[in-house]
Image (cartoon, rainbow, N blue to C red; front, side):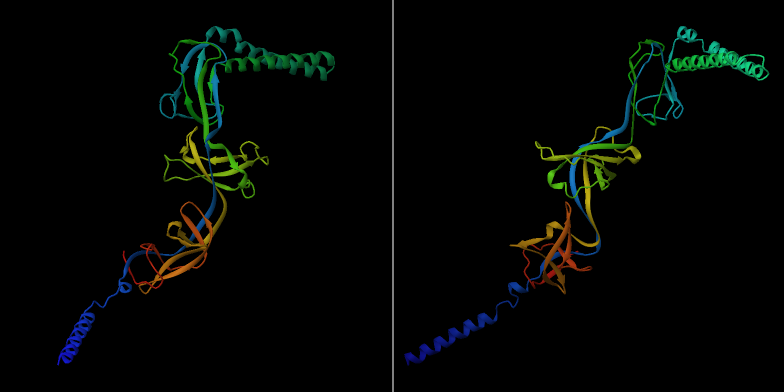
Length: 353
């Protein structure tokens, strides 16, 4: 009887255990959908870059000094109707400052020199006509040519001396320095009067690592950026490269020309230069930070029918943020860009917007 009761108790416990098992949730860990975000892949372009830095310098820059003493007369800018000031644009030949000295002008006597030239030219014409008629000798006619030549030189030198009173722009540019002098006060010879720079075209000297000498070439395009211009990329080009490697720094020198349209860069700015040494167009480009690795294998996940699929990659060019995919992905694939860290092959996923 006891044996029979023991069998009944064992059967009852088994039934309870089976019932408990049958009442467990049907969803296992593998059936839970992992939330992820995806991006649909489209073809684009990517460039291999060599990065360097340097100081942007103006193509032309000059400080004009007074060539004589005189009373200081700052001129009016016709663009603004006000006296010239720092930052004003100037054109080649434009008068910026005039130095006045009546005694100096009278000493040059430019009107008298011009009149002497006219008289000498008239005498030359007269002597030439007489020579053709036999009225004067060749020597006499040639003497009038000498007088004309001397009078012309004297007149031209007079004009050059008068030009020393005018401080004019030697090229199109911007006023970057304008020392203050009180109007109508005499300034001495050799004093700085105005500084002008043309920075519509700029250059920067660079030093590149020895490892770059095999693929940095003249005429390669360059992207110039500055932290004050986060939305602007300015175009440049490699203009010169030295073939010599410094034994001390293991670098070689180069020069970049910069097309500074809109004068966005300013002389003296410390800028970043990205030299484009290679470029791929119509390529599959993905963010570098979504790539995972396992030993020598690079891989990512894509989503098909709410399932995560692993794709091994062969990559190509890369820049600071992105990388080219040569094999493993195709256009319109849905690449997992968030939530990929814990994914496994064939895991269920829920795509979030």
